Image (cartoon, helix red, strand yellow):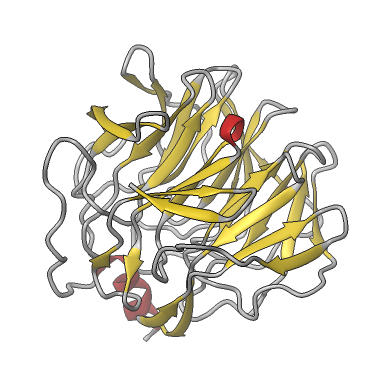
Length: 341
C-alpha cells in the first residue's frame, strides 16, 4: 500500500486539466512550478512545471515578469528539465554568482544565467541523492544554498528524506551537513531565508499521509544546528504544498495557502494568510482583501523594493482536481490588498 501511494504522488493518471491560457503573452496556469526573484535584474522569473498530475513535466519554459508593466515575456527553455521525466523544484537565486541554481530528480545541479539566457550543467563530484519535492533556500551571509528533504523520485521504493545539504557555487561542491538533530522527514515543504537573524526557516510539507508536525524550524549554518522555534498560535494543521516568503522589512514570514490532507490523494486547500513575527515569536492570521480562491501547489516570491509579493498558479477546488488558479496575483504586504492581473 505504501509503495502504491508513493508512486501515485507523482504518477497517478487523473482527469484532464482545465483549458489553460495558451497565448504567448502569459504563462499557462500550472503547478509544481517555481517563482524566483532575480535581484540584479529586478524581475520575477517563472520556471515551468506541470499542467496536470502525472509523471510528465510538460511545461519546460522560463518566463520573466515585469512588476511595473504587469507584463510577462517568455525568455527561454527550462533546460534543467532535459525531458519530460525529469523534475526540478525550488530553484533559488545565488546572489554572489548571479545564477539561478536548480537541483533535479536525476541528481543534476544546473545554473541559469539570465543575462546570457544560458544553462550550465555543473556536474559536481559529490551531490545529494536524486530527489523530488525537496526545499532549497539561499543563505546570503554564507553564500551557500541549503537543501532539505524530499523523496527519491527515481523509484517507487525510494525513501522520504530529512537530510541537510549545502552547495557552494564557487567550488562547485555539495556537502552533507550532519547536525545533531534534523526536522522530521518531509517533502513539499516551504523554506525561506531570514536575512536579519541569518538562518533558514522551514514549515509544512507532507509524508504519504498528512504531516503531524506543525512546528517551525530554523537552521543556523554557522553552527550547523536545526532548532525548533517556540510558537504562539498559528495554523491548526501542517499544510502540504504551501508557499512562504520572508519579509525583511517586518522581520516576518508570510505564509499563504496549502492543503490539509484527508487521505493520500484527497484534501482541501485554504486561502489563509499567516504571518510569523520573529520579534515576539507569534503567528497572526491576517485580514486580507480580494484574496485568491483556496489554493495549493502555487509559488510566490518577494519583490523587496516594492514591499509586494507575487503569486502564480496552483491547484484549486480540492487536491488532485487538476483545476488551476488563473492570472497573476500581487499582494501589498502593508495593507494586505490583493490584485489580480
